[in-house]
Image 1 (cartoon, one colour):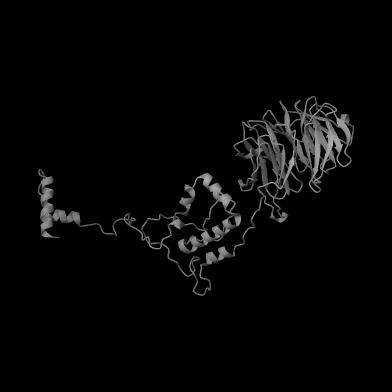
Image 2 (tube, rainbow, N blue to C red; image 1 turned 30 degrees about the vertical axis):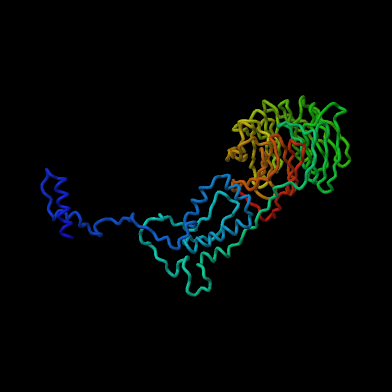
Length: 481
């Protein structure tokens, strides 16, 4: 050490410590010279390491941070502007870069439509970017991230597996309707079910006092009936499973059975004292729900009085009815916020669910999972709830943000279409939203799907009938819980 510097240092220290004893040069040297050996103290990461920025790609290093900083609106705009194919290519390219530059070890690219999952390495390694320490594990020729000297590929084995992994076919869901029909005099009533699709691909719509049929094969429109002569109006329609009979519920409490092919009324069922807003077929048995809080089950092959069965459990109007796919259980929803499940052997409900906070109109049974029931609540509830009717236990719920008017389950995939203030397609297995077709939809619109789920009908309050083409899925691609 320089002698002049030592004198100045000692003079400054003695001035600050006038009352203390003078500081010797040996004390200063002891302070300035470290005495602890590296072997006696625990190893610590240095905090003064400044990495070299030459050749560093900071967009890759901070890829997650840049994605999280985007607002939800920006993310939606980016997703709408980018096609599904470019998304898949971009994810594969990003995974390849992470394998080669960062050693991420990604072997498979996740589905680009799943928003809740990102590219994840098979063996993730978490360490701080600015932590200066030697790597405990050195790469060996057997390491998957290293390149074998005998390999002809310039990339690692993990990247080779990534490139050889099969790509999932891109789902193409139409966002615009391919068919628009006029639907005047459509009643603005949440509790009515005025549209239904038959197994023969014929759509029935109740408009005012008339019921119209539209054939998807020929695009021909026919008027089935007109109740203006009787001073009545249509409040619900429902096709039989064979597609040859149409049940029409009226405001006065009658249920008329019509032959769709002949265009003639077969007979009229009486028994309700108020409007019939819900209909459900079970083979040749017809269930009807009314504002008189009663559910009537009748066999159309026998006289009505002999086969009539009354189910009483709701305290307000019955607005939703749906039979299970095995024809053993009937689910009913009412304006009393209750969801009831009935069977053939009892006139009392076998199960009762009261978790909904508003009217339960949207009801659907899963064709893939036995005993799985989905229901949607009104404005005060805004939730889709799933139930296990085999055990009577609630499974989960999804808050949609608005009232759930209708639900339709796909017959070829474990996906659910919900009708709120907008039309949404949900994947039940992944609990995520797939796509949202763009259309002007209002709160009281109706929803139904065709027998093959190749077409989806949506009727809005602007007196238009919109048709969306559904996904064509091969049966071997079915997903189960």
